[in-house]
Length: 334
Ligand code: AMP
Ligand code: TRP
Image (cartoon, rainbow, N blue to C red; front, top):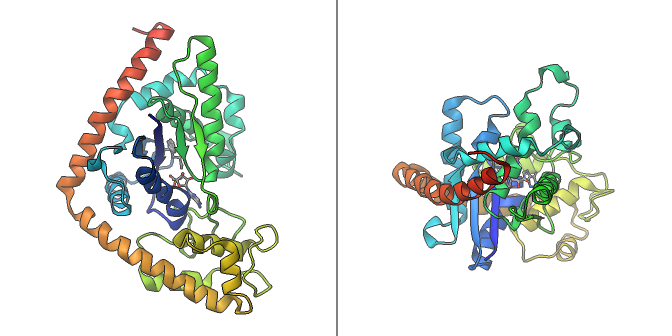
């Protein structure tokens, strides 16, 4: 049996970057690997590493569950579960234990922390934000996870998880499975529509820089029309020299996996950016409109969402407590 685990923060509304890099892959894994056990976590303890409005955090936690259901994650089907991180205390407990098997040198190398805190004085930075990769390691290691499907910004955190797990195993015994990260072939890093040198992020201040799964067709059209392009007016995939159009091609592929990059280039050869952008906007807007209809019907059913949370908690608590007990015993905690 293969265990697959991944997580998403309820720190904003999901973007097409989350969808293409992570969530779409999760649904495909659920369908393609019926013998695997999958857990998808709404990681609200990670979200509080940046100050959140309490009511909004709670709403967004349910929003995110409804999005996973709308995309096709089906906890009733048997092999996939959705869980909310804060409902299983073992995540926080194991994180504290693993803090004592992780060095400051390792955390200092984490590029996401460096990027998020660039230009700020270290004295004012929050310890939780710094420590965030250790909590992520705990999430993964509690469930004997083999595969962690993520966007490429999380690969360094998974490498750290592997190092922490190996260190612990070497000191005591083989208690942790060493997990592997898995990224999609194209689209593992969807870039900001206004600045293709930056990742598309749901917490960006510039709403033109991202497309949300909940954006209506007018917004999708506007954002794609206004997306920056390169100077050549040719639909060519070359991320190093033509990053903006290459990013739009990745988005196209994320929404229509049947066309290869070569086929897209061929289809738009000689047509310039205008036609390509128009077709892309239509493709994205149509796909999102269908998803939004599904989303709304799940989001309205609060009783059902509550049930998903309760069932996810029950399923995961058992597994997590077992692993935590083994760990505590190994290091002499009663
Ligand atoms: P987050 O929004 O940080 O909770 O990320 C949830 C998942 O989406 C992680 O697997 C990320 O790697 C992935 N992800 C976030 N932003 C992007 C992006 N711009 N392109 C591809 N994957 C992304
Ligand atoms: N840190 C991840 C992100 O921001 C979210 C996350 C938390 C996660 N725990 C995880 C992803 C465990 C995969 C596995 O995207």
